[in-house]
Length: 424
Image (cartoon, rainbow, N blue to C red; front, side, top):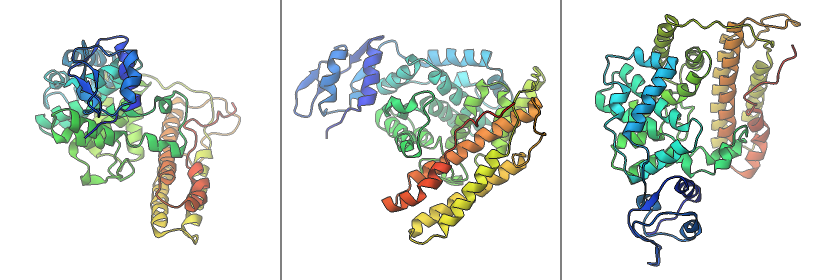
């Protein structure tokens, strides 16, 4: 059996080798038995082409290690720093105290093989907030696990799965992660596989319990079946996967102003996506934080409009027209029926938050801060869900002709995340 080297992952290893010693832990041979790299040799830029052009007798991940890479001590230090500096995150942990070991205590005994150490080190050294995001997800997942009354072993699995949940992204062309570059629906196919890739890497290259890899594969799934990559539903998602998915959803919001309010509103908006335990935990954390800090919602320039609600209505009408058209396969019509049901849920969510009415008269140059905050968060969350539906249609297995018929709806279901600025 031979192994093909993933070019995107190898590029990241080579980049890391410029900053830290990356060493061969064994001789590396190509499929013909030629030695490409000797045990103990340091990986350099000069080896990149040689490694990428040959199939190897063993995966390259099992033959390399990085010296001075990420370990449990660094993860614990990062955890303590995040809890010191991120008050919303600390509040979530505070309402879960006494329900099991602290996140730091769950992280401290973790051990990583050469492959996982390499991947975590690449994430850490890449800059940005990717490593902090991984640690944050691990912290939140353990907190949600406590609230779900999962045992200490499951909490430990949540901590580990949180750290590793995005390693599959290391095998994807980095061009798809360019800041400010919105992905078209058909491009989503390159990213939608990363949870499954992560599971495969964990199961193949380390001796972790199967529950960890499974949870990583489920970290973008949703209880209502609107997630990916399997569109798994309810009890088909493991409890650890449910905790991890909610943690991944909430983590990014906690760095923004009024982070817990954002998270609570997002969880309320699409209440079927996550267990209510997650919403209750965030709501408790919000009350806990408000006892210490009261941040005012300042008036903000800009006037909310009904444009997004009208956009949803247009999409529903187009979806209904396509669902009743002739010439589409039964499978495609079934998908359109599912899209229609989810559009109706999104529409009801928009109505519940008042996105269907103009709340203030034209000509007003500022708006109540709290209401505009809720409008902004709700609009962004709804736009994400519309984009998910557009991506689902783009990735539908159907004929070219059917894709051409669906294209207008596919693009309509892919609005920009930020609405056009309203005239003040």
